[in-house]
Length: 231
Image (tube, rainbow, N blue to C red):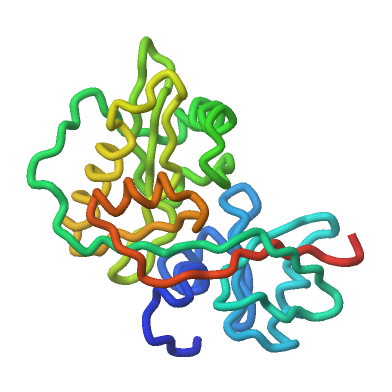
């Protein structure tokens, strides 16, 4: 595996090549998460051979998304569609010493149907049947109904991504998302890791919230959808 200045410069690749290898497939050139875990994929370096290796990991009609410094120049056998610009933000200030955690519950496999239903209502981003296996998830229930959640996604040495942050419309503007993120961040930091996250560059409201919670922009990526042309 090639060396990078920081594991965060290739977060998908680094996670799949290390702590989350059991959740993916691939080789020394290209890797991807299993389809029911996450739609993310990565190549070790942007070469013709690496893109061909990614092509072999895709079924006809299947799509994955990749992060790259610029729009990737893929092999002719693949089709690349630019989705948007992603801001990678890293926790730079210490998490609050005291955070209101009342009502939060730990979520697991048994909660997967409720998690998928909440995602369908709130559209926080990619979330599959096994996404909860990527890390710890916590949520808030009202009369048994899951109304908010957040969890951990990509993991690598020293860093854990916070993702899946979503709140039902009727429960917005109560500071719940910020509390969820802060609780997760404190748990991550207690293990000696640094929390980071990804957010679309045009989502100014979310970026402002994360900045208030102590996250700062580290770098930007191009988010690209990749599919086989022979689909």
